[in-house]
Image 1 (tube, helix red, strand yellow):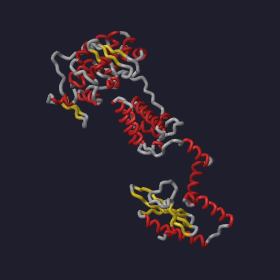
Image 2 (cartoon, rainbow, N blue to C red):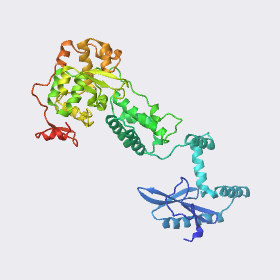
Image 3 (spheres, one colour):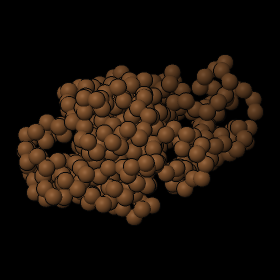
Image 4 (cartoon, rainbow, N blue to C red):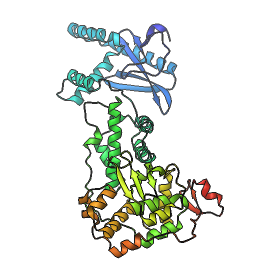
Length: 446
């Protein structure tokens, strides 16, 4: 095709996919008639589309090759020009308006038909709102905002930032689990997420109220990070903040019976004893265990010192070590992190499943508080040891067990001469398997 028929939107540059919405890749002209050619990616391949009006109807045709699109555009432009010549009934004032409109659009390389079509669609969507006012508001809201950032990309950046901030492995696992599912459900731009979509996603998963609220909290933290990073407007609340948490209600406090914990301890490999013993006989939270170092566990003074940065309540706490807890801890090597691998928590619950022992949420901590309160009959003292308020202790844990049962609980000792069994953990299948070699437990960092 002769170059006199073509007008590139970016002269001197290599032709590629159109970069600006509404701007054609190039325009084929014949007299006063013009046919734009657009480019775009369809199913991973570049396609070329021509658009024009014929007999009052908009026509769009797509081509795989640019030369084919040029050739068809030339034919269409010639036919349009012919129609102008045969039935040009524009009055002088109308012609002046037409020429003025074409002149205004000249520097934008946008055909008049495309400009009018886009303007009409904007007016239709905005209703009585002036188009210029809507644009000014959009520019104000989007000032400093980077458009087009996808949820998966923002999640990846967020997780890297949290890891650099020194967040605990357990907290990072929670973030990865929740946000991995969130990114899979919302793979598009983060700006497109709406509160009703988040609410519907949480409801569709049929989650327990506590789990649902925990996931919503994680999403709120993530979207607020996106605001600070310039991926969402900073002057507005995030879409997750508009989603209400559900009421959890007063749930029944579920605990282990002494024989259940004893069954778990007797079947546990060395690496899992700290989780079961410290959780059941000192009431430490899983998050506190994940941050605890053996240097804070003093068997001689029979105390565990939780520093402010380790305790959930951000205040220093002293937890006593009972005689039976000391006996269980004597069986393990006490150097470095108490829980060197966050996967040990999964192994503990897998052990319970293998033994058909139910594992309700926070069951070890609930059990300790219940039996400790029954033993010493002092709500304030138990509240100090557990890092909780006396009101909560009184409301949820009072009179759940008898004093006799509490003595049985704190009377669970390892048998004389007993050594923990060796059990292998299959990470791929998340199953515990009985081992036969003394080296198996060492490989699992007992």
